[in-house]
Length: 565
Image (cartoon, rainbow, N blue to C red):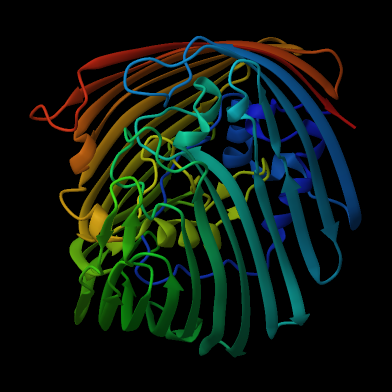
């Protein structure tokens, strides 16, 4: 029986096979037009690395759930101490003991026409020194695939919830203690009905729509006037509907494959999230041989974003009016290659004008060996933070370890603590590389990430100005099994985040080291201890923003236990 997974990974060993339910999904929603590829990465938490890599390298090893319904409850408790609550003031935080209550439940249902997984793990946090910091954070990953009419009509349901720092420069959730003033809760739900019709080996057509509701809620808004100017309007919601029609050729055309897609979306919400997008594309691909396919695309798109909403600053008694709207339309085109050197590897690279901008796009998954895999992504497009969350949720499923993955098994990070959240329209550049290695007693993961946001439209006049930001980081994780019931986990991260917000124009350099020891008393009871050290150094740009150069070192100690029933 697999060892229990640490709470940081959000899964128990007994529930590992259950989460494979989503692998049985009859369909993965096609990527929404104007979508950036999500970040790659094995986790946003510390712990449970081996189970995550097993899910990526050998999903079948986790096994498939048996028909019927299964409920796996679990309970965890942690005691934490930190000498610095990150996010309190400019240069000094407060120490505190923090008690974490960690209930969770995994529900899996398998029938002839449904495949359902619901994993909900809230976190109740109680602070001894700072009672105003007490809070509940919600963590949810759920999906259900329903066959309404066999081989014709389907319905996919998806839900997600997660908490992350509002501002950039932070490491994984279990390596630093942040204040509620610097945290944002994200929720997303979607329903995707679609109809698929096959015309023998000539063509297949699909008609569908996706209804989505996505929101991000800053838990406490401004704090002492010291937070970046992205805060006004940072609590936003996005209600959208997306419709699409695709027609793709079948195997009768042998080396040639052609496709037609027509998509549209209409969104309403706070700030710049009132938008419409329409897109029509024709693709023509040619298989040079078994490994290489030439890709071409020609189309037309139309993009519109409404202006930001008015904003009233009560602290300074200032009213800000609407901001300007954003409009763009034109011809889309791209060309590139898809290379499939072996059954476990796919590399797709294109260049052209798509997703509202002209750039290269890369989505690569390459198996160096049976135990080593490398994932790489690069994309650029015009979008908002909430749209990125929505598209990442809707286009992901769960692998055998219960982690979000894309269509080719690429690990996806729906939330990334290092980049924080944004409330404006931007030209976003994403780049990420993940390398994983799984040995008999050791597991390694290397993550490199880069993101650049260039503001194109503001949520409100209070947040106009040079809000461009850039972040890049490197993460290295190593888990070692001393024996079956005793494991160690070592984690390190370094990175830099440059924030162009006018009120707190600053650069942040971050270093993190973390060591965790885990001991399994039984197959269902796990205990662990962890020490993390982090340092965030702030350097104002051109002496603006009222901040002075500071270094904020932080120590975090965690002792906990996790029981699966």
